[in-house]
Length: 82
Image (cartoon, rainbow, N blue to C red; front, side, top):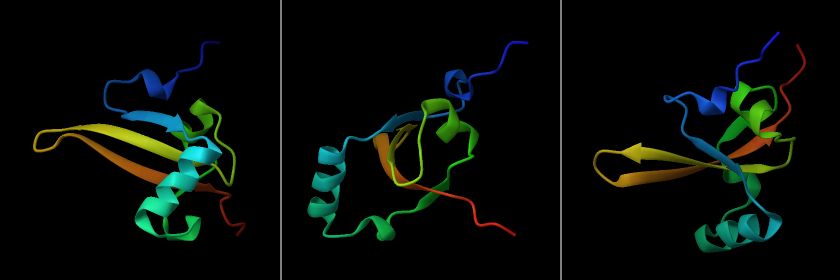
């Protein structure tokens, strides 16, 4: 059975795992900690497709009509158990 790679879908923006050095620079530039970043669950289809694990930071780059390109960041976290 063939699995769908969600990252190849035209509606899914580019997702890239950031290096520890890039994360450190991001946190320094914005004077924040990782806990200030928006969260993304580890079982999110895009996180799984790019191989992200809890504790990693993902850079998401979208096309924007006003800015040309918009970048956001997500901290990958484990989904809480019910």
